[in-house]
Image (cartoon, rainbow over all chains, first blue to last red; front, side):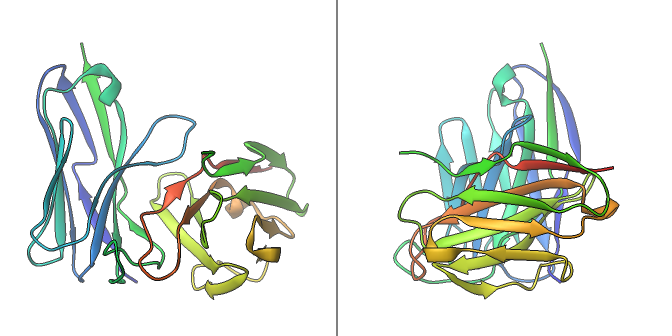
Length: 118
Length: 115
């Protein structure tokens, strides 16, 4: 089956630093999504990307959909304590529709565990 | 608007028993998905409903797992009989209509422990 390689597995950074994580795949995905999970909660959508080459921001977060459709990265600028958590990339093979997103199941990376030291 | 809700939040049962998990999707969402995260592994897709129909159940581990979505509203996932390897967090997600669907929104999961 399809697999996503997400790196790094964990990050220990100082508050205020910028963060970068990425996902790569051997196969094409037509939708990329980034989620964050806090302890005891479910994944919360951060950014959805529907077009190759698309660069999208959400506050201090920026994500890009790789031009080859086989990778995506997420950057967090000026990290703050509430950024702590596990970040997941997810890819979706299907493509289409008004929002550009498909309806099939997601393939997830293993997650990047972000730890911030004050 | 209420998000995806799952019940129970935790369940601890013995091997061989039966457990039923419930998911209420966001109101009006046709697509409903079940996922599972086993400790140390990535979140894995189990199956996808479009309204009351199973669209894709390729991720279901075996025939001890039965998912239903009667009336196209809430869904249940039953594990019978439960085995030790079934322990993990079971997530439900939903998205709006089938063609041109929006992104999937997740519930907080059911943490299932098999003793």
